[in-house]
Image 1 (cartoon, rainbow, N blue to C red):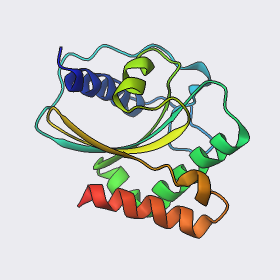
Image 2: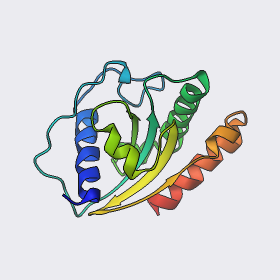
Image 3: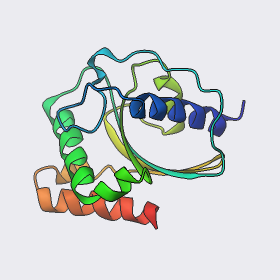
Image 4: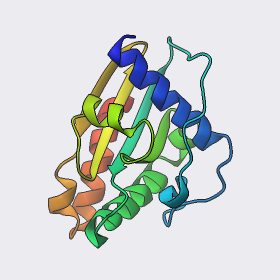
Length: 158
């Protein structure tokens, strides 16, 4: 199976699981609680013609306070600055534990191994993404942190 198609199927499955009503929310209130994540559901078909922007926060099961703060602050920025895009499903916020089933493929596709914020644009079988590595340096400055994430997401929404 095409590598990009595999990633799209996994991401779509995760998205369907998330949108299907997992009522356990993270501290930020935007994603499922990963402390008791279940295996990914099967997906029979994926809409290949639509464009999807996803803000991933990849993490491991064990996380330090800084990793948790980055996730919470990124979720807050996204919820505040992109409420309409989230409601319209033009943008999805998706924290994912790389240690969960399916995480290994995503780890390889996005070249991540530690907590990382990634903005991805998926269009058909193509994936374009950027790792927002400056969040680590900007965490102590909430205005610059927010501006950085907002600008990078806006580039993908245009």
